[in-house]
Image (cartoon, rainbow, N blue to C red; front, top):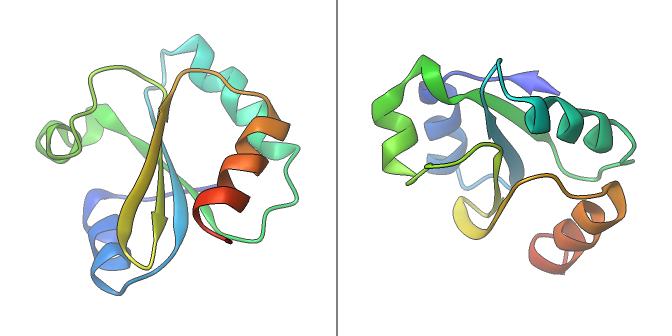
Length: 101
């Protein structure tokens, strides 16, 4: 899972890319557990990570109030958001439903 800066994420959105964005913090236990679940997924779309504390303004733009927050983007559009720890199967199902459908 590649860690991106706000500008890199915004470029992907502007380019109409499809991807999963895990927004987290280094001190967050559930964020670390979610990373382990994501590693179990044989994903067909890129999954990126963003440290919410690295750019508070960017985090606020996406209304991140809790971590982890995961956003699914399809063709540059924010199509689904979920909060907290989810299983690899659940995440894979959400990717299939909202991005690959």
